[in-house]
Length: 315
Image (tube, rainbow, N blue to C red; front, side, top):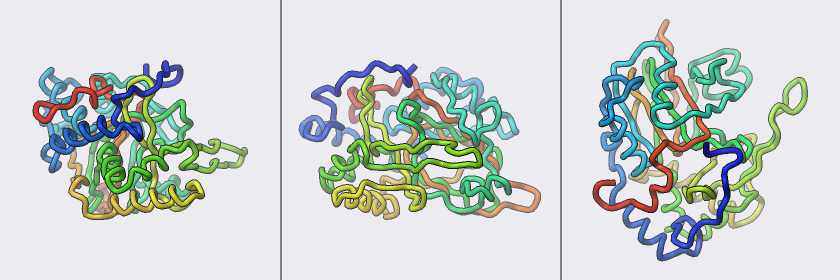
């Protein structure tokens, strides 16, 4: 398992995510940009049943995740069946669920409008926009979220669109603007999430860490981020402020690296915890939007170290 207890080793000299490895970065950047998805359709895999993928369906999902850190799927699995994300995750080598306190008892989270959770300030359970983020940005470092699945059971009457950005592309866009941006966001104290308190005291301790980091076991790039302005604290230095401002400008701008789609019933997202946001939406009377979400400690199997082998064609 990749998670608590993983063996650490320093990044290799050919790792493109290490600031200063300019030649390795340039080679990887050019291949990445040439191969990347240009539209949501480039991410889409038609599957008969996500609970029982064929070998060809699984291979196509993994191929896209190796290239773009994400894939979309479309299926006829439209019922309220939480075995869909659970079995799909298992087939992709995802085993260690993040059973956070908002998840259902089985570890899969049902995301729909909830008066109680909305009243407690949890935006995913409202109809409001969810700003750009990666999942689990408030988790402790040894329990980082490396993969996430979303499965749509019911879509909204209007709105609820999803925007996606491969975090490796975000890294490129920042480094191309100024290498100092990625250096700043790799600082060990770049982004802090204050402790969450409840009636009994500290429900979740403060989480301090980098935005970008390199997985010690595989050399993969990991990102933790939120565009929220409340309950977050950026490192108080000019370099971090400039980097955070540039990243938000990219996310809220018109970059063609950002892919926008709408999950319909039976559709889903499989990803190595890429950047994503949700637009505001409206439910129809008697028919509420419902998605299942599963978060995992592992990366999608077969995508570890994909940066080493990426080629312009056949990624």
